[in-house]
Length: 149
Image 1 (cartoon, rainbow, N blue to C red):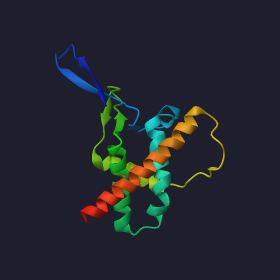
Image 2: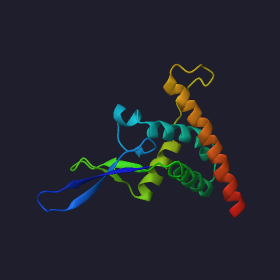
Image 3: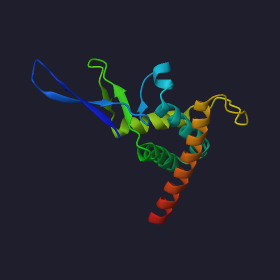
Image 4: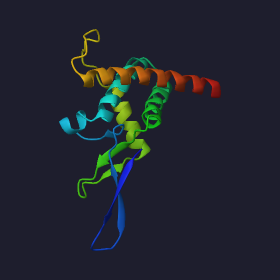
């Protein structure tokens, strides 16, 4: 599912594996390049679905909500990636950084959007389908967690 490229470093003769962002990956950064990635769009949609639950939760439950969002991203095959400023290679960030990104996004404010408007493009229709899929996935994960408890 995830793709890697091997590059040979001519100076040291080493082979390094560089992560190539996949459709479901969340890429850290600013600007349209990151904002328009499918994984980042899906990430924002998942955040929107959990924001109210997070904001009304106790501190302990906020941690659970945040961990659940990270788990959802990972379950759908997503990783949290950042581009190394010196090598320009994408690297998977530590779990703590992913957790911090999710909790920061959950604390943010939601932009007003009309959910009743008709999709304007194929891409918007796909995003709506992804929202339905993520809702079903969240329900499945919650049921599995309840069964484990």
